[in-house]
Amino acid sequence: MDAHSVVYDLNFLFIVVYRYLWCPVRRIILSLFKWLDWLSILCLGIVGYVLDLDLSRLESNSFFYNPVDWIQGNAPLVLLLSVSLLAISRILRWWLRGKTNEQKIIDRHISELLDKFRQVCFPELPPNTPIDHNRVTLFKHVDFKFWMWPFKGLFNPWGYWLGPWSGWLCVIYRSGHVTQDGTTVFLAPDAAQNSEGVAGQTWRRGAYRVGSEGSKLPDLNGEEYISFVGRLWFKTIRWLNISSTKAERFDKLDRRVRDYAKNTNTSVESVWQRLKKRKTCPTSILGVTIRDEKKECWGVLVMDSSNEHSCIDTTEKKFRDGLSLLNRELRRYGIFEG
Image 1 (tube, helix red, strand yellow):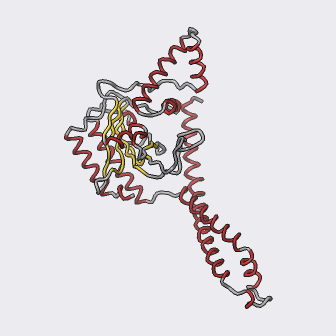
Image 2 (image 1 turned 45 degrees about the horizontal axis):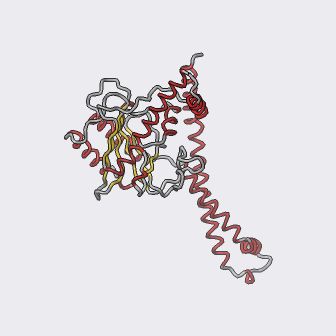
């Protein structure tokens, strides 16, 4: 059995498990938590009502005497459990939430809009060019981002001396049907000098380009990932002036990685992680800000290219017209209201 067969079988198994096992289980779990939600609210109401009752007015042999006596005696515990169950239910229902049919239709239309704008940005692409080599990505700026993956810092998900309230640019839509990675997040704080990535610099400046036709970013696509231990080993060899062909190749790659990180305003480790995950490393990137109905900065639109075809200049009329049309359509679908 070859590697392609194994990958195909694993993908098929994943689809079967997701469709016929996880989806029904997910619906059952959501229903259970919905009932748990109502039960918690009911318990809070009952406790509030029972605490106002005068136990001395009930007969000791009454059916309600013992339950009322127990609730009044354990009211703090019942309230704590009810509030905890309500909070857990709400959090898990939010985490397991699914998109409505209306939202799926909107998502499809937004994807089509970005595909059309991609054709405006890269008009000279040859037929059958891989979709992930020329992309258009829409980032939304949020003031608060609780969940962060991958972590920005070793012990702090948001990075050192930062928190979820720091200000972030999050991917919400991307052209094409591949590389739909919604975990990409860049720091875009009020202290603009700390903005991260091309997206962050675009948020800071209004428009930003790296890797023009004359000076592309270092082409790291296809380069082999080297672990932290391996990098430390090769650096030690170079420091000791030991002759090694592999160490010399690493030294050249390491300089290119550092140059790439510097030009894209990202960390060196994040570039190595892209190589580890075999993600595309664009050789040219252009970003422009997106404004809402009030003409306030809402997010960032980033066009990246991994081949010789860079995005056309922002001063060209067809780019301005295409961006204006995209902005109007995004407004029509209520994207800026979310």
